Length: 492
Image 1 (cartoon, rainbow, N blue to C red):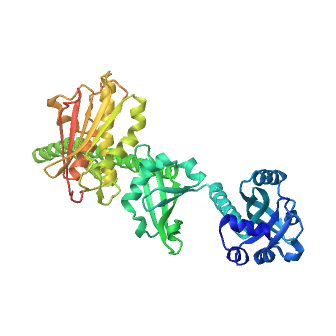
Image 2: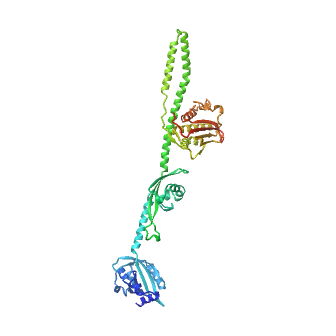
Image 3: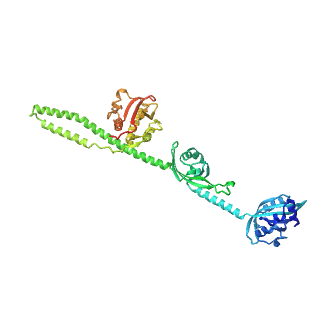
């Protein structure tokens, strides 16, 4: 007990309070490591009675699984008179292993006369920590092998966790620059219910679906040990839908192309048949009048009955043609975004623009009012004007090959202008270009003599709009300007 008393004198503490009542296991050894005494907590921890330990070397606690280098470093430290603290793998009398958090303090009386060892069993703490590490590893492993992009953000929209799918498919810079801004505009983390957002990044035409789910995480700050404080976070599952939406968009455009081509075909047939009726109606009427005059003057004129029969056959043929003029498919009136109509027309015409090396510039008003219209019909009209501009640029073999399309508003009307870098249209032809079968292509070319601008005029008339032609101020060619009421009535 002299060693123990010396330790308490050295540390100016009360032996009874610090030894017998100490909740930590305490073992006192001499300078060679032979056990001199221990307290009740040490007996409880190790399973040995004090009488079984006195005179034994402290190696009695060794599990023999602690690396030799740890013991060597331990003895070097305490032999030099310094305190050592670390963990050892020990065993109890029963053979049960435990992890000891051990502090060994040299007891000096000039030289070292013994050691004061304080032992704490931290097996449960270490095990819990290992389990937490394992759970964290499994959690991260599961999240990292999934193809989903998952990120967790706090109330300040800072990322607190992200998986490998997020890094591979989205990345923090892209998330911060383009996706997070949309989430901030639509979501309050502290008041969040599960929400789903569709986010379109227009500059590179990428689309994402984001499922945002709220979660409450505990505050790990030491100050909140006795207060179960929760902080709002959000788990975001990000799925890129770019390819799917491109496929749907292509399907939509292809369907629109079919409708427009069908409408164009029907319109052309209508114009051809109506033109045919118009061309034949006048001479047939003249012949009918002539026969009636001849009949009134000379009832016996030979051939009158034959001529009357021919005229009746001609009227019958004209009526037959008129009754077989095909009807266009009725398209319902819709609330229409004119800018989207322009984009669709450009997308459908993109192949022709690329083939002829023609650059198209869009200058679209960002806040156009909507227009009640027939979308596919308006798209057809714009495609016809774009095709007309392409034909003109090719016809004159223009060096500068450009088309400019603008949208804007003037006094309650929505306006669309299309300008080209061709040679323009003479003012004397401003009305003629809208006549069926008008073309400025030479008669000996194999180009079809089309219905393009005639179709455009009819579509604009159906929407009670206006179509005018003027010289382009920005380019060398013509400028077609369409004006539509911002609330168009039902087309005829």
